Length: 512
Image 1 (cartoon, rainbow, N blue to C red):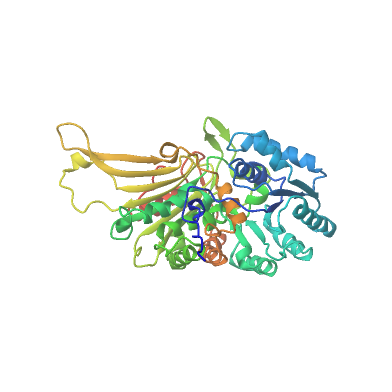
Image 2 (image 1 turned 90 degrees about the vertical axis):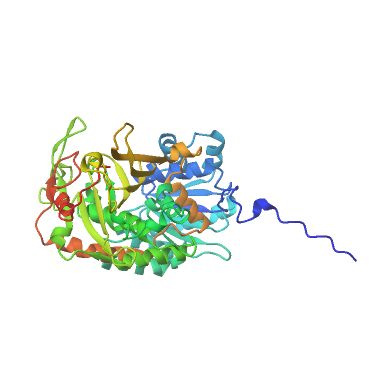
C-alpha cells in the first residue's frame, strides 16, 4: 500500500520567514493607573495602533482599574479621546468597534479586597465571553510605592495564578526602587507573586527602533566592529536632554532627580548596548549576559567631585519666554537639593574599552529635546596637511540619534572643492523616515506586543537593575553630603562644572 507524500510545509509559516508579522494570541491586558498621563499619552494609543496594524487578535480584551466612578462606557470614551489625540495610525471605525467590544472597567482602591475580587470575576468572564483563554497581563502604571500593594492583591485574589496551558504576566514601570536596597526589596515582593520569566520591567528606550539599530549597525556590518575598541575610539558621549521643566511632576520628581530618573535605567542601558560584546544570538539570555558583563565592568572615577557634576535650572529666558527656576516650580521646596541635571564620567574595565571614558549627561531645561549616543574616534596619527588646510577638521564620529530625528550620522573629513587642499568635517546621514516607507512604531507598541507574545529580550533583568544601582548609589550618596547643585541657565547645555569635567581630559561636550 503506497503512502501519500507529505505535503510541504507552508513557507509562510516558516519561523525564519519575516514576511508575516508576529501576532499576539488570545489575551487580556489589565492596566492599573489607567487614568494617568502615561496611559492616556502612550499605553492606550499604542494598544489601538497594534490593533489597527492587525497585531492583536479579535479575542483581545482591555480592562481598566481606577478609583474613578466610571462605567465601561465612560472608560471607552476616555480611551477614544486618548486614541484620537495621540494614536500614530489613522482612526478606523471598524478597528475601534472590534477593540471597544472587549473593554471593561473596574472601580476600586488598591487596598480594596472587594474590588480585586470583582476584577478576578471580570477576568474570568472575559475568558468565557471574549475568548481570552486565561492569558492575562497586568500593567502597573502606578507610583512605585503602590507596587507591593497591587502585587499582594493580585496574589490574594488569585489573579496571578494561571490556569493550565495559560499564562499570567506583570509589567512594571520604572523606577525599580530608588537605590540598590529598595530595588532588592521590590524584587522580593515581585518574586513572591510572579516567577522571573513572567516579570517584564519596562524601559521604553529599549523599544525604540534606533536603540535596537545599535545592535544591527554593529553586528550586521563588518564596517564598524573592527574599530569599535580602544585602539580607535577616543571617548563616548551619551546625552538625554529635555527642553522642558518638571511641569506638574513635582510630586514624583523632587527627591528622585535626573540621575535616578533616567541615568540609572535609560542611559546605563544605552551604555551597555554600545559597549557589549557580540551575543551568541539575540535571545533574552544571550543579550542579558553580555549587558551584565558590561555593567559589572563599569568603574567610577577615583574623585567623584571631579568626575561627576549636578545642577538645577535657574529662572531665565528660553525660547522667547521667561521660565521659572526649579525652586519656583509648584510643589518644590526652596531648600530642595534634587538635581535637574546630572553628568558623570565612567569607564568600562575590559580589554576592549580600557582607557576609554564614557560621559553621560541628562537634564531638563536644556538647549533642545534630544537623545543621542556619540562614539568619537581618535584623531588620525599623522596629517600630511598644514594647520591652515585642516584647521576645521575635528574628530570622526558615529552618532546614533535616538530621538527625535531617528537615525545615524557619520562625521568624517572631506576635501573642500577648489584648487587648495583644504579639509573640513562633513556629515553623512541615515534617517528612518527617508530610508523606509513604513513609519517606526512607538516603543510602547513593540514592548506591549512583546509582553503578550512572552518575548523578553528588550526587558531588563533584575540583575541588570541591581548592577545599575551599584554604579549610581555611590554617586548619589556622595552628592547628599557634598554641597548643593550648581545653577545653570535655561536653554543652555548644563553646568559649568560638567564642562570643566571634560576640559580636564582635554575634551568638550558635543553640540547635539
